[in-house]
Length: 201
Image (cartoon, rainbow, N blue to C red; front, side):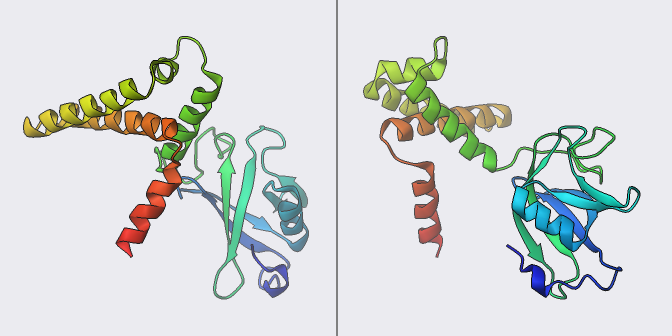
């Protein structure tokens, strides 16, 4: 987290520009201004708060719309006179209803894989009715492993046929069933990422 004491608020008469970035997709969401008080409130509450030049007062993003920006981290630039604020938006950020004030479209991010893995873990515990994931866990280890094998073969066949749509569909099915297998084997997705990372190094 940023060291407030190092920041230079004097260049803009007590204000400092803050670029808000979606922590999951790294898309730029908006630009606002903070003074020392709003920055402290942001850190204390965990909700991004600006100094509104129009209202001449502090303004927590989302206090009217409900579309809050949940703080993850704040970085200062090399001159300590501007901020990069990483946050998770609870809705669309722009007052026009758009995801971003800069017209950036929201795209699925790699973070979705973590969300999917977490959802599968939750399903393995709660076992909600009428859920395909639940049926897999109830069918047991052998069936889960068999499904991974089937999806792997179907992925190979799609690749051999050079069928782009089928490759995308089959790889998606394979990843999902691999996640189910990992959960059943009590292996975290993060362990796979760490292993791949260590190999890369």
